[in-house]
Length: 335
Image 1: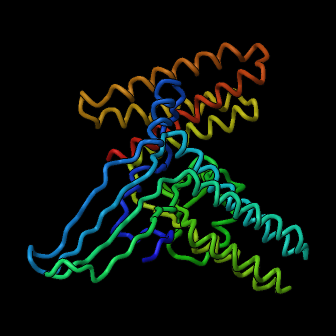
Image 2: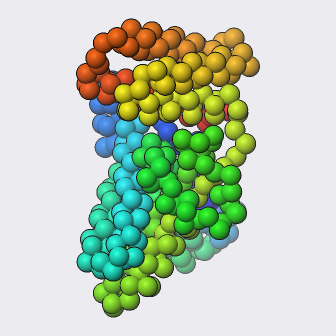
Image 3: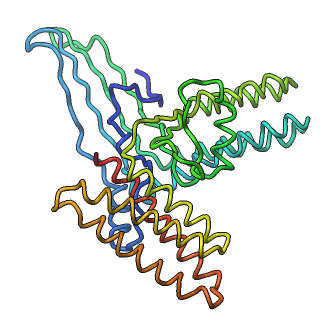
């Protein structure tokens, strides 16, 4: 009987694509966060699926999931996964500069980030057992399965992380039309296959040990090209426009350009209004609330034009815009 951890096959995995994480909304309230973190220690009831007829050969698959992810845990996993690809890019740059030691350090850091993500993700114990008509067990296998495909959002959509991956994948038709967030569109879903990426990182380490920097560079390139899947689907245009305008407003505030931020917030509000109009009356509450908050922030920015604004206040405003960006992405998942 074997006991090992493997990557979950597709048929075992639920469609986590609904997440995205394209970006979950922030969960800052202490009571909710505490409750969700406590839930990680609770084991779900085992699920048993039986195949075969009574009295004949019969196979039972018993799965038991240990752990769960809160919204903040999912956010952590996404940001850590984004760090993995930053380390990959830095390692490639180091190899191009003939700095093998620096490259090795970046690859090792990437593997540590992968392991940190795996510590966060739930694990499902799967026991498969087949019995003959006389009740004798003729096959038995058990293993721990983990879905280590992680949706990337905030950390990845920054140009410094996304652009190198796009550059590495420029010959791949599957990413045609995907642009960084400063442009017209970003991909709704960007999924990292950590099992594949980690395998490439291990290959890169071995190549460095063998003094084969070209092989190491090739392995790192594959991590970027094959380890990230851009799922670019036709988006609801008003939501996409509102999302991009919100992010551009955040970038403007980071540069302390309140005039540009106001202009982007006005664009965001206009597209949110268009989106609101296509929703049923009973589903408009969240959009109405965001539009009200956008108006309030716009008013504050106008009042600040003749006064200096502290860095702490700008950081708070930036966090608010990030929350809105996350929330708009969550609306894509509901469609």
